[in-house]
Amino acid sequence: MTYYKYKEIKQHFYDFIENQDQEWIISNKEDLHHHCYNTDYYIIGTYQAKQWLNDHTFEVIDIIKEYEQNNFGEVNTDFSNPESVVNMYAYIVGEEIVQDYINSLDSKVA
Image (cartoon, rainbow, N blue to C red; front, side):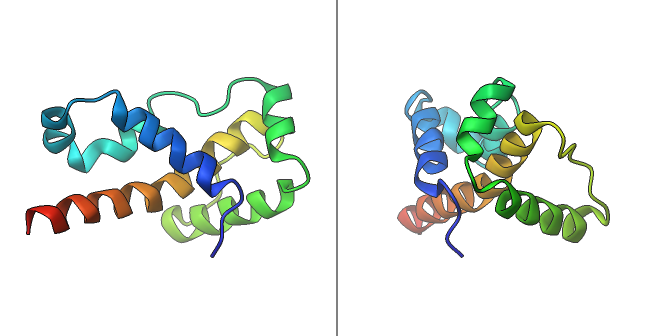
């Protein structure tokens, strides 16, 4: 699947990683996703979130609904809040990005 704004969300992760030292990355490898996508907002502000979503709002909502239903058995994101929608979407896409990064670290060690 090709995610909307995948490259931008991926760049956010690599910008985050650049600001960490290698020792911290290795010791926090299992929590990189949490630290990057869950301890701070990806987008702040309703206007910025609406601009970011552009005409992909329903596509993004469908991805969030499927993810939450599959992982939690229910949908919890407030779809009336564009900021919540964008940040949850970045969280979801970020899982794949971080997993790919961890896999690349593991393959370098192996």
